[in-house]
Image 1 (cartoon, one colour):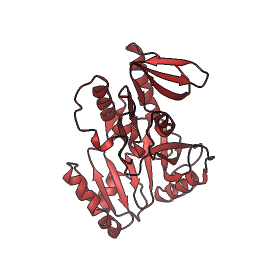
Image 2 (cartoon, helix red, strand yellow; image 1 turned 90 degrees about the vertical axis):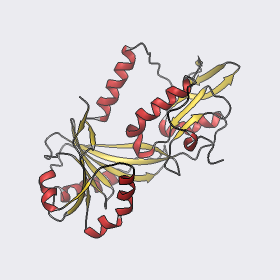
Image 3 (tube, one colour; image 1 turned 135 degrees about the horizontal axis):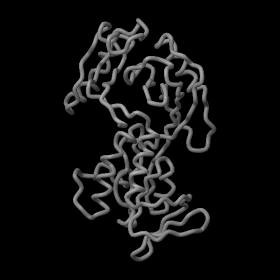
Image 4 (cartoon, one colour; image 1 turned 180 degrees about the vertical axis):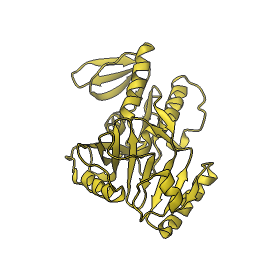
Length: 283
């Protein structure tokens, strides 16, 4: 119930900007992705009410849509708990390999003795990896969004405004206008002027969009310089598995990453090579 095939629409300001992106689309086609270039008539049918200036786009009919990322994640959590997992809240300060054990030390001084540990802490993973001898060049690309109430616009599918760096997404909980990249680390206060700038553009591009009642948000995308995640074992112990650094594609790549992590934890051969994602590839 959380995923539907609505298709996605990549929109360009001009034919020239679409042609400039042809190399990217060629690579997607070679990788097996299906899509088609569409004109203004098609655009109006796929997404009624879009500003008339947009006459060039690419439609990917197989594009999938998650109804709401939080609801989807919560449902996975509830399923895991129902199958016997338990939740313990705490801030991990360091991880140590001691003989056959792996010790996780929490901020309050408590220690957890585990056979296997998976570090999947997003942008906060860098500090824990360092305690195990892996210095990874992980940075956070801070992104912003505003979620408008349900009914703010009759949005039929996800719209990528590729020449402007933001996306408008229909969710079960509203219309989300988000994007941007800000290299501001984990401590800098949010600059919601970025969210406001995207919202102003969305108002121009989607005439009739209702801006009242929006909720602003800023999040941390854990990103690596080569845009590949970190998946593999710690330098000092194979009992600790890394699974972080997925950049803008955390939800998209989560299931495949989970399969690889499960295979490594079980001592099985991974379904694909994890060598390109090894933690020490920059050292």
